[in-house]
Amino acid sequence: MPADLDELFAALGSYTDRVPVGPPEQARRRGQRRTRRRLAASALAVMLVIGSAAVVATRFQQPDLPPTPATTTPSAAPVRFTPLQPLGAGVDMTLGGYGMAAVVGDRAYVGARTVDGRLQVNAIDLTTGNPLWSTVDLGEFGDWNGLLAGPQAVVAIGEHDDGTSPDHVLMVLDPDTGAKRWETGFDDLDILWYDIGAVLPTRTSVRALDWRTGAELWRIPVPDTKPQPAFLQNLSTADATTTPAMLRVGLDPSDHRFFMIEPSGRLHRYDAATGLEQEVVPDAGPAVATREGLLNNYRLVDNQLFSTNDDRTEAYRYDLRNPAGLVPIYTATGRDRITSVTACGPERACVITGSSESDTLNLVDLSSGRTLWQVEIDYAQNAVAAGDWIITDRGNLVEATTGRRVDQPSTVFGGWVTPGGALIFTADAEEPARRPHTVFGVSTLDGSSMSLGQIGPIAGFCAWSTTVLVCPTAQGFRAWRFAT
Image (cartoon, rainbow, N blue to C red; front, side, top):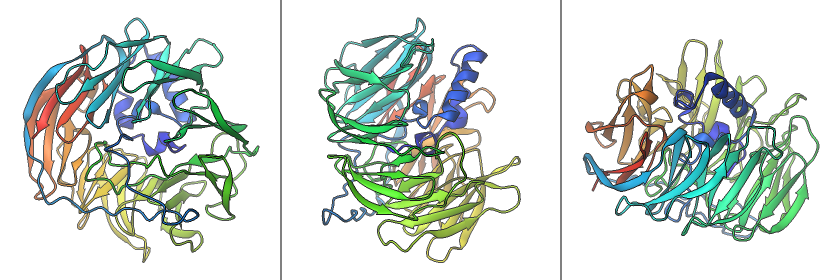
């Protein structure tokens, strides 16, 4: 997974801050940690699912060339929404904070800290709604930083939060049984996911660990720069018809490229299987000023490296598919600053800007550099297109051809089911985590919406396949069928 996950997958970020997770001081410390670290894994697993039904079908044409991205063909078939129907027993768990779910194929992996501080993980069979294992207890932790899942492994990230070193622990579980395979210190909170193993960057080195044994496969040094380099893995929006993921952003674990970008804008390409450097591009991004901390102004989506300058007033693109240098694509005006920029359909980019007054979604034509339209949106950090529609992590649904919003009032989050439909969740604007949520199915074929029913309160982050929704509740994790 790419390094800057707190930006790429901070979808639901505003919602996250309102999930009840203990006393205010704990919440403040948690917010500070999320701000300074790359991996806000509390909002990760529901955004990025890398299972067998979720990887991008992207392959190398020649060994030394970047792959040609798959293209999205919007499904003409509507999603057959139905009223929410409870499915099976779910997983009983007394949550002590937020819970998370990640759908991979016909399974939903779920995890949370309990009220007595135990970090627990289980899995739900999406065909029945029943548990696949007995709940796995990973020990006592003061906090946790999320759940990741793929066909290779399930990963839970515990946090001692008591001065223990290492503070964070990455625990790798067998996806079929839940048995713990191995664990390692994880204080740099940075992971890239490949079929050969987990690639873990730190301040001083990058190492690859085998998924099954935890054995170190290779290790390379990291240059001592200020800010620290960023590590990236290509994401794709081209799997929107099949990927059961929130924002329909996926990756191909067999695409072994991984990238390091330095503060100077120099881009290095490595082979994740060997750790060997394969290519260096001197000027793939804007140079940034010397400072402490992390380099966090890059995203690599659809083989396009998007970046912003230091004060977030300029956005750029470096196209790995057809390298033509670093190209400016957007300039913010007035008090606006660029929150994010990412691919949003063929030769288009979604640029989210924000000021103290409002947030705006801008659709940019990359061929001409023109801004096609602007629309005011609720607070959001990411947007993804499928067919003729764009959805933000807050659940704002926008018609790509016109910029017209069609979402429900009081939307708190949402995402694609297929390009033919989306799930939108609404709740009380002031206390969304303490009130029931109404779930809507929205057709992107005609813009019509259907109220599917109420669930909740939702105690964290949901995930769904194309037919089944899984959410954490006060009683544990529950499943509902919402489409046939």
